[in-house]
Image (spheres, rainbow, N blue to C red):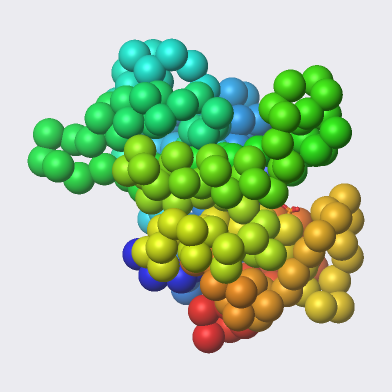
Length: 232
Ligand code: C5P
């Protein structure tokens, strides 16, 4: 799977997401489905969007004991998603179990990536509340290394960290990066943003773009602009 743009479909209902995706007639973008939509609509939403011809990143961020994660991942694999994720904090044993669960009888499996430290967790909270007594940037890279050692395909990170992740974990290890905005667009609640072109330059493999596409007057044009800048 080469470099691609993933649209974060942060909608509340099937009606909204189907109506949004129906605007795309000539291309079938890779879409991210999050917890909100999945919990509201259940696994049927994945089947519906798959049937429409889209690839799916199911962003459920699993974190539990290895056996539970393994069995849950087998369910997601049967749903035929293309990418899913776990928390690296669940340990290498949990991540390896996740891969086992995802791997189908024929040896194929969806891509599996990990969240390192959520960007909503500050270094202060990480150290004083969670008692992780290390600098946050070092923790993120250490978790990325654990992820690679457990055999996963990549991590979610900022485009600004993509180069360093590739340095530590190798060029083939995937970086999936949110926090992307057009140079002339609204930043919204994102703090550290880069343009699609800059994300490409920094080495991101997939950019996850939500509102700059979903809230655009012309979402198809906004998506095409992203692809033109990022994929080229
Ligand atoms: O609308 P926007 O482009 O900001 O959407 C970005 C998407 O990426 C959202 O679904 C958001 O939850 C997700 N995300 C993020 N930052 C992270 C991890 C995930 O923005 N660190």
